[in-house]
Amino acid sequence: MENTVDNSGKTDITTRSFESFEVGETHQSPDQVMLQKNIDAFAHLTGDLNPIHLDAEFAEKTVFRSTVAHGLYLSSILAGMAFERGLLGRNILALEQSHEDYLQAVKPGDVIFGRVTIASKDPDASKRCGRIAWNLELLRRDGEEETVVVQAVWRTLVFKDQYLP
View 1 (cartoon, rainbow, N blue to C red):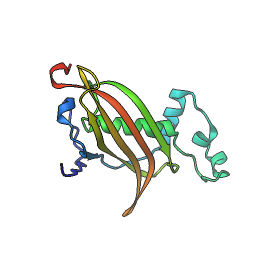
View 2: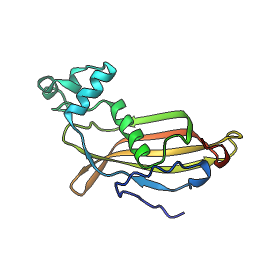
View 3: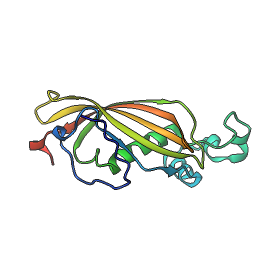
C-alpha cells in the first residue's frame, strides 16, 4: 500500500476493524500549539507538580530555559491524536505494550503534530482480535523544519470484523 498521509484535520469517527488496517498506512494530525495552561492542567490532574513544568522562574535557570511539558502528557497527546484520526476507540480491546523515547523537550508555544504508521499486523493473536504494532512520532514544527520529539511503539489488540462492538 502506498504511504498515505491524512492531515486534513477532519475527525474520522468510523470504528475500524483489524482487517481495515494496512501495513504502511500513515496518518498525520493537524498542528497544535503547546499551551502552558494545558501543562498546568495535566500537572494538577496527575499530581506531578515538578517546578520544571509549572514555575517559569525556576525553569529559566535550567538547561531548558523554560517550563516544559510532561513526557506522559506528550504520550497522551499522541493517543488523543490517534483517537481523533479514528484509529483508536471502541475497536481496541487492549494496549498490550507501550514504549516511548523522549528525545527533546516541548515548551509552551511550540507547534507540534503527530504521525502514526501501521508497522505490522498479526491476525493470529486471538479468535476475536488481531495484533497491530504502531509506530508513532510527535514532532515539533519550526517553519519548514520538523524535529521528532517523541518516538513511540505501541502494540494493541484490535477487534476483528465479526467481533467489533
